[in-house]
Image 1 (cartoon, rainbow, N blue to C red):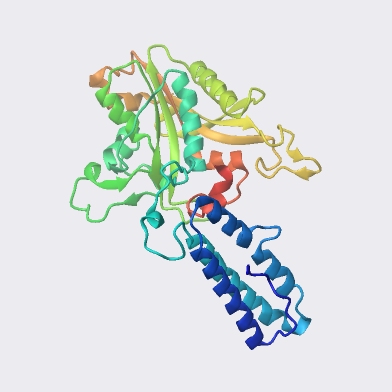
Image 2 (image 1 turned 180 degrees about the horizontal axis):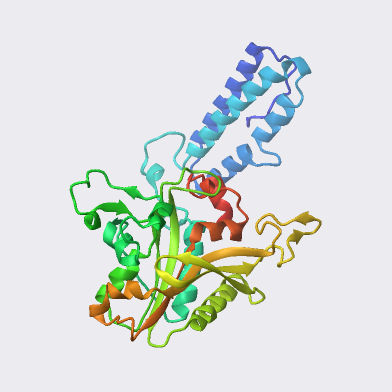
Length: 371
């Protein structure tokens, strides 16, 4: 006779144990009588169907019908029973119960395979690719170089002579055991991607247009806005008769491509050893639209000024060209401009994140929202 779920009146541990045992025995017995696909489907539906399956009936009759003082014990027993019945039903196959027949080893090759979930770009890398893409469309090539650099390429060839005070602002991380070497040969972790400019000019003659993405390192203690490792993108254009107007036009176009056509740009004088004249580029705040306010509240990203500093730039100092003069970069014949920006800072602004450390902690819960 087919098994039916009895209504319990006794909720003692012994009574629950007996009822559960009878249920499991009935399920195992029915599993042994399965001999066709139709019988297998009917068996699974009878025990596992959501609306009127036996497990659903057990939940309604045994657990919901239990008196208040017995609900805890009944809940434990019902959960154990559900797990055991589910195991028996899922392991059932044509030919009966737990036999070792060949039918038990069948594989349905029409079922889709198990795929590993595909990840998404990290928000910093995604921002970097977007910036590089803008300049590639302007005809720039991508250049790369080593992270471990020499003093010559990181400083001297970029117009940072020995003992120049601007070296102190770089907070350089030096490789240990370099004291016996000449200063220009000492190794360090590059503090900017600018060394790639010199390395590229040594290999390629002008005209030249490159964009340089990569990681850089500085001795900054980690906090909400600083990290000892971060990302930069620099650009270099060298040709005859390049002017500051070319620099402004290029960067104005790039900022509009990145932040929207309504963005305005503003250049303020600054100082960098490898450019002269030098400037810092500001764009109208793309969060508050340049008003300095977000509704009735002040706009924090632009500090209520309506402007956000994006990058440093300038015309390449003739002293830099002197280091690669023999490869066609005679400062009397060519000119150029350079610019550099921090990718992590732009990603902070773009995604409204207030702590740069979140980008480097590898917390999947945080990163999933940018996928």
